[in-house]
Length: 412
Image (cartoon, rainbow, N blue to C red; front, side, top):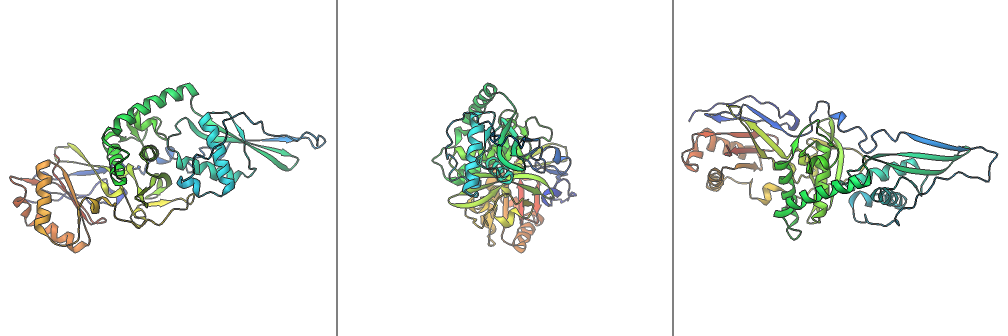
């Protein structure tokens, strides 16, 4: 069998090194992650406060009218309830922050115009709103807020919070019905009684297979773009993951920061009591063959990452106190038996045979570089793959040195 390698293109965002061999080489590979170019217009530096807490208003009282202390008008809203107890970002707040979070959330869910908060500290307000948006990915009808400070002389006496709604309540209700119908359809293959791993894998695969990364997608900062438009960016992916996993009973919050130096959003999830990071944006990978035909496959590297793995390409901001994720039992490769810790060519060959017959992509992760190179030499360079894949005439593969992986692409 002849061999040929092609040069690496398009995967610098994940430091991946793709190569190919035999008759039809892989000439190009790509990732549907956040693009380094012009991403700022989709994800502002402070994604929860699109205008950096502006505009604000300051209402002052003439000093001679001491008896008439100005107060923010309090609209009648539904009773404030602590419905977010147990949510990750909510639990990071102190008691004052949690109260303000509850007040904001009640106002947004009721779609009331404004509320006079129980705090006069704008930083408490800002941090509470950031936490709220991390815990609730489904708030598609609100985009930031404005606030009004009421003062008496030089003294701040009241702080009024006004959400910035993007649609009327009746339109929101209609869109919610449409989203609910799509989610119900998507959830046909999963149950709340399934394991946390199965739920996380199901949602990860759903987004990879049903949603395209498009930089100029409409409503890209919320779940409308995912469920109704099927085109989104990283913020939309992260919101959709939180929205769906919450409905399946899996704790999940949105994490913001940077990926390879550019603004990005992903998730922190809890599986069987242990925390992992998930980046669904980077779950859809692809390559093109010699004829230019693009073939996609799901990249499971980013489904359940440890902190160390997450930090290879991601840098969280300081808004949330994140746990040190070290658990690996729900790692895809370990869970699916694709993690190779010792040289067993017959075992690897059987996995290749199955993937060949099923026309699947098989990604093997190796415990060390020497084991990976041994497999590469044996199956690809020495051609022993033909012993397990009858009538094979070409091998398309991706080699990833960072993750110590070889992906055999039989899905053409």
